[in-house]
Amino acid sequence: MKRRWALAATVVLILTSGSPAIAAAPITTAIYTADPSALVVGDTLYLYTGHDEAPAGGGNFVMRDWHVFSSTDATTFTDQGARLSLANFPWAGLDAWAGEVERGANGRYYWYVPVNGNGAGWMDIGVAVGDSPTGPFTDARGGPLISDSTPNSSPLNIDPTVFSDDDGQVYMYWGSYYGLRAVRLNANMTQTVGSVVTPTGVSNFWEAPWMFKRNGTYYLAYAANDSACSAPGYACIRYATAGNPLGPWTHRGVVLDQVSSTTNHPAIIEFKGQWYMVYHNAAAPGGGNFRRSVTIDKLFWNADGTMQKVVQTTGGGTGGSNLALSATASTSYVSPWETLGAINDGFTPTSSADHSHGAYGNWNHQGTEWIEYRWPTAQSVRRVTTYWFDDNQGIDLPASCQVQYWNGTAYVNVPGQSACGVAANTANSTTFTPVSTTRLRLNITSRTGFSTGVLEWTAHS
Ligand code: FUB
Image 1 (spheres, helix red, strand yellow):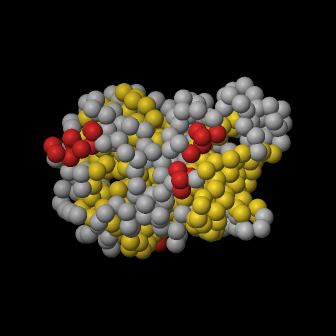
Image 2 (cartoon, protein in one colour):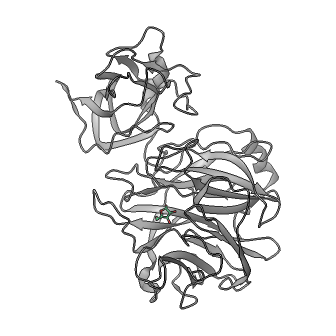
Image 3 (cartoon, helix red, strand yellow):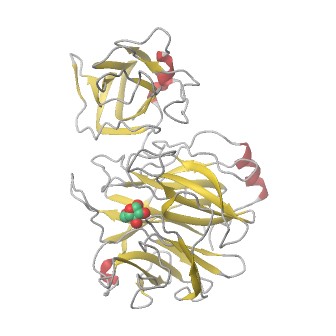
């Protein structure tokens, strides 16, 4: 039973507020975290995360345990440690992937996790139980709850989301490889009831379902990877709604654009009257597709019960306000009909083709051009985001980019720069070792035969 703060007064606040989120992002840089689920108990928000341990440059998931984080303000999170690991499941050996904790009617806490069960096939879903949100947790079954031998199981049995309805009925959704599945669980939370069903209406489902209820409507958010919302190999978060917990579902749109990691995984929850989207990206220093970081942003509702697309921020918890807003922009070249001022007007584009608030473009120059910010006094900067402009004509996504800063004598590359992302339809995040400077520059190198453009370039301390 989660998400219980739907007071009338807070609903009014949610419907009328539209300001960008300021929250902690990422929740920690001490370790890499992924695949969040969220649970509110009393005045505390708990996040249950996976733990990425792949080496720098690694090309596979290395995940052995799960962590619990707690917060009373959704900004500062305390790592309560690895509260569950593969060692808790003697029948499993690898792949501590995306889990979720749900409170049972008996007051106990059930942690559902996908693991490589060492049996037939690949991934199974197990469940551990504990008497507090932080455990200790122990294997509740001594074997899988769902496996490849479960009739009508998913092509990949991962990513369970468990939902306890107001009437005491419990439902579990899970799956990947486009194979969403659902089943009822009994009141003890550790056995399935009836047949596994294949829900309908969940358009472009790929993996990572998250189920919740608001004002009598059931919501299912999930990772999709169709070309309408993300670049090849990346995911966006879509969602569907239903009047019944097992559907049929109606697709409602995209609630979170593509992020800097290929995978994404949502948890949506209300805490102290504010709704949040918890997800992961590759934005932490040294991050990547297998070294992800859980982050959190505010989520706002429309009056008709649809969700506004989440604005991805760097968060106030890590000092993330947009320094570009107070900078003077300049460039090596801007086409006479384009607008350099668009790059720091604070607008969040809806796609790389969205030049409704103007765009910087350098057609018909090719090769390397730059844009630059100057401040009257030195700023500490550790991260930028770049939303590329692509007009599907002469301006295309760049081949590469490089952030530089003025060291008092010359422009030099920022130290420890993470990948300078060139993905479409997203704010590509680039982190580096903090620099103190009055000037920051983005060198942009075009693809052969094209010019380049930028819709928004933010800078953060
Ligand atoms: O972390 C491993 C897998 O990547 C998760 O199970 C998926 O949701 C994706 O995030």
